[in-house]
Length: 157
Image (cartoon, rainbow, N blue to C red; front, side, top):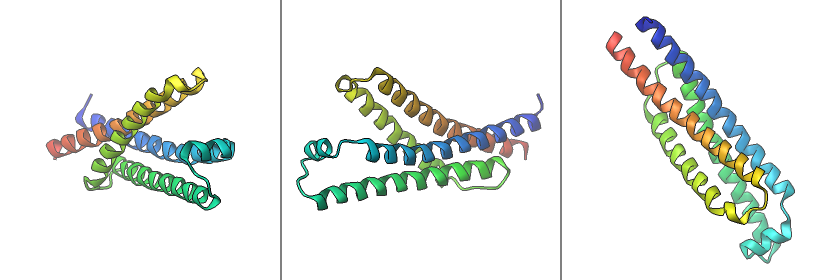
């Protein structure tokens, strides 16, 4: 395989992985909306130790802000990866952000495994682990492909 074909393959892989990161950002938004719609409000208040309605609204707003930040981070990483995959020069900041997002996803995966004994549905546990592991893999693929593409582009001139 020629160097140009390898570079093109890495560009394709980077743009596809960027699309995957974008999809997981949208999934985060859907997941929190489903959680807020389906959760037992009284159980959530008891678990969080919330008595007043104002405090529960604060919790909902805080969860919404966290999801919007997550969506923004994933959009930034995903769109930057896609742009670099299509040949546009991008800085290294999005790779640092992708690395930090992968660490946060790994911590989330750890929390899912830690609370798994307290959950009743094995299917929910397996699905959550699979989704988080796939999100980490997409971020790792973005980082790997971008670094490899940069190295190959630098060598080939």
